[in-house]
Length: 247
Length: 161
Image (cartoon, rainbow over all chains, first blue to last red; front, side, top):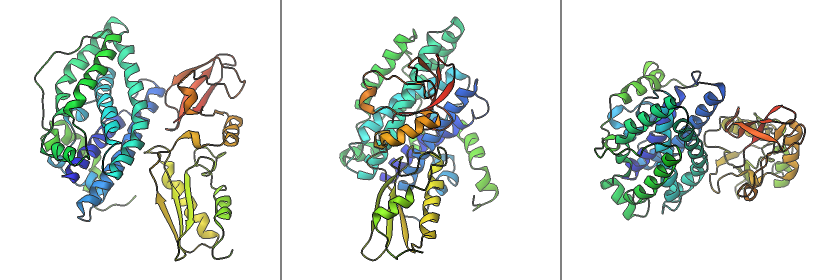
């Protein structure tokens, strides 16, 4: 159970990092290129901490690299939100804002985990993620409260991504057990503070709060959109073409 | 070669010779990356280091540089420990280290307690407080990019973290 839980934490960070890395060399301006890849780097470091711990807990002789590079799509436990494509800048920032707002709350809760290792990784990551959230909030406001064109596109992005946010707060058997052991938080209870944060930002950005109620789910148990396979194809290419290759 | 078990203070002095690969005017001691140095009862040297940012690519280079230096000075058994808690903060940097950073052309981080109030970033070149953020991220994870409205120079800021 702990292994499953750690995979979820690690895979969210890993897959979003990989997505952001796709912007490298393609950012709209140099500063944004640097910013996106810096966020990607923070997330990659966090993924490494989580997956190293996951590998230890599993005790099957695997390490974090094997978990990252030698699992197939159905074994990944990231939420559907982070595997969504980069699209245009509003899509990337909308995805980032939804996730950062969730991530910031989640890590805050995890700093109080009864598992000291989880608590210390969360405390480390939280400082970085608080900064990510400030930045993605700024961008949502800048694009939402920008020109008619940027406003319309930002609205389109947050509406389209909305259906992937429900899964973040869903409690399944793994989450319940982690909560009972004091290791993880009640995700359902995080929904309201998250909504409040999102609403406040969208108000400032002159954006409408999305109203859809149907939510797409599955990532946490390994049922992904077809997007994930393409991400892994690129991310895992080297280890699959040259098994055991060392840097 | 030195005595088999040099004192901890001496080892800390050695470590002041290990520069940060990205900001060579600061050592790993200045940056407070070195968290602990101790000898175990059975004669193993343990050096605990902490990463600045989770994904900082300099961290592996730093670990390698420390290992090389300590081995060169005759220490036979070294264990490098990665320590995450308490999480690294720029508040651990000494004022002397911050001054060297400024002379190098990078605006030093403010104490976190000051950020809560008014965060003025002073231009490291002309000292003006009329500065503005260009990008929240600079050339490395630990820096942001600013520009000075007085002397018009762009400059890096070591982010308060």
